[in-house]
Image (cartoon, rainbow, N blue to C red; front, side, top):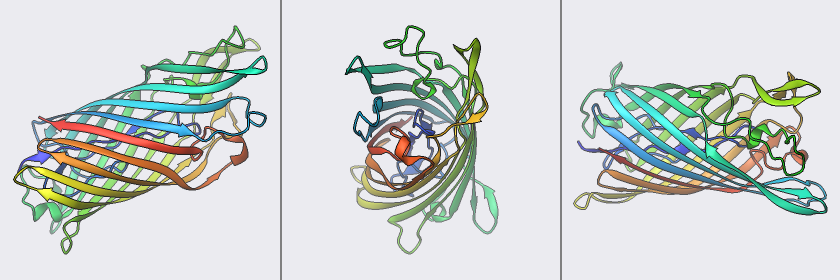
Length: 342
């Protein structure tokens, strides 16, 4: 069975949504559906390569400048990726992100725009796939359409490499620069991600696929070049926990033309711990958010195009009134993914 591989990227952040995280999964034209933000449980076929591109455009809510003299305006998270099926049950990925972050800041009674762009931290991921069919077993080399309706699972893990620049500062108002870790393109230290997925195409209604994904990201303290009172600043971004569910509905298919269109609906819960500066938990950081995602995914031969809108449905931020530019304060996120298998 020929498979179309789909990999989408979860552009999320910590308290200020300053990085992107990839979600993983593959799907066949006649097999289970794959969401935009929630990782599915399919692996790359053995010996096959995946190429993909993803954009997460974030537009922040703006408030009175008397209340927030400096405000995040928009972020563009571009992610380029390549994956390889080392075994039917083991897939490896490399992600190369490029970020553009823009904010509007006050100066001398007026305002100016500050933008920081650059390649962010590379990340490496490994995905281990298994299924349940009268017992747990590794994902086999070939599966029939009936086999694809079994429960499928993955365990995945990865590490980011500190290749981005954490030490670029805005010097428009202060020649020494202003310390804004959330506006950087790198963390300065590796981060670790661990996750689990479950996917089930419904037997009685095979057009519908249920997907579950949960993961945890651990960050570590980094000592920056920026100095204050003769000491270099130390900063640690808050760890993240996510729990996502999704439904993919096969709305249209034409197997003769190798064409398929899915409608997607997702609920994504995210909890961010507080950031720490010089070992002290920071106010105006952290909290819990529930996002809703609506979108479509179009498959044609060995290519896939996905698009959708992500909006906050509910939030409980730690100091919500002070957290302009934090997760949960978006006007919307526009998500676009393109992938191909060869």
